[in-house]
Length: 425
Ligand SMILES: [Ca+2]
Image 1 (cartoon, helix red, strand yellow):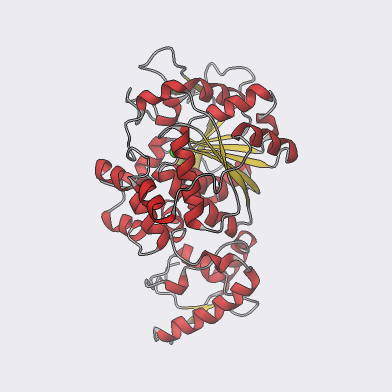
Image 2 (image 1 turned 180 degrees about the horizontal axis):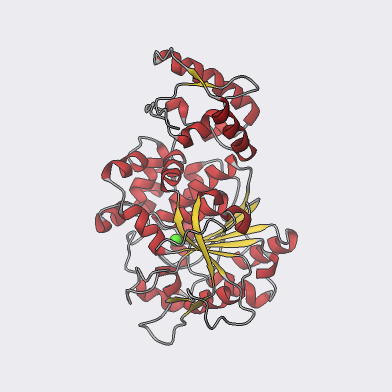
């Protein structure tokens, strides 16, 4: 359903841009890709990832904690740790092993055979709860919490610190449904909400700035991707793409495609401009009393019978799928260190671009017309922090608007020149 309303503020004004992030996760193949995406976008947008917290969900908390460390190990340069959390015992009955017995398509043991037992190499001595409480006290109203699993850790943090949610800047949740397309055994609920519905219920009743990335939204995106679209992202021959393919291998066989759920939450948290439409409504989460409704989301669409003092949830209903696809692809590329020294890299990129275009034999650059230039200058307010590693390996010259974003990074007070094949831009 499309609730486009031209009077609505842009979503970034509603949610705000993240500056410090904690990721609560249960890897999981889509979590793995999401964490790599978070690392990529955090460099681009100058966001600090404070750490990961783990909870049982896709698999036991022990298993997903191990997987989280493997993600950090493979990336090699994240600079944050894993904080082991807890699990609700009765979520285990829904562990259908979607991502395999190790929740990583069998990759966990394969990785450790080659690289040695991961042990506690990237594990903090602090528990997830200790870490969450410490961080919100250290950075009150600064932290964006991205929830990509069940909410057991968050509920436990709330028990110990009743104003825990108030101390967060905002929460972005992958979970729930907004039109009844579920992936839990009762058909109508989303997996994370079904896993710990009481925790989800409590958080949604109290959190003041919470964004819901529903399963419906994610499913609509990845279910409509062509094989070519998927190959562009997952078929890359890079270290990170190879890892994501392997950790998602069993899920891919079952679903006939790659799952893209947690990644959407990360993209919205770190770049809210990706949201094209949203609604703000009160939501009700059904608790664990009845299996047929466990974790279901009821949304007060028409806003009769609103509940007094209950905050509204930001429900994302439409995203820029093209931009998301680009993010999902680029975060799996090698050479993320291009972001390490931004100004230096910018100059280097500029040289590399010139060499690249020259090698391609493209002589006929067009100068951008003033209106497009003006547009880009406006965009640059945000894009100063935007990454540019795309064009170095870009093989497709039919640049679209988002590729133009990247071009802006090459501009250093000189006339921006580029070849516009798509003249209607
Ligand atoms: Ca997850």
